[in-house]
Image (cartoon, one colour):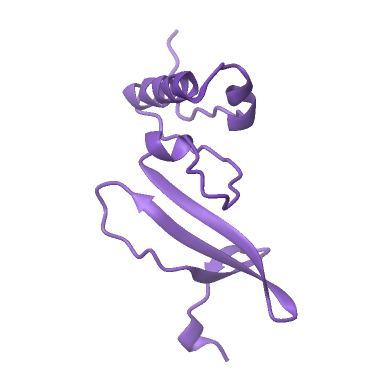
Length: 116
């Protein structure tokens, strides 16, 4: 009896990975090795990490093919959710920050010129 794998998920913290390596060079090599191994198996990877705008580019940004940033920022007297595709290798894309709406039906892009 043989079985096929139709889905595969790896859930890990980049912060935990960082604690296993003595310096950033080895952490980057370890992360690149893991991403490459998953790509060799035809797996699409989704790596989640936190980012603070302190001027340092996170190591995971160098080894990934795409970066999608989700923001939750104050706008006047309320909070606004936005999305930005900062990097998508091999694909022409908008780098603008787009407002979003998150509800029970999922995440929706909100076109600012079409808002009531």
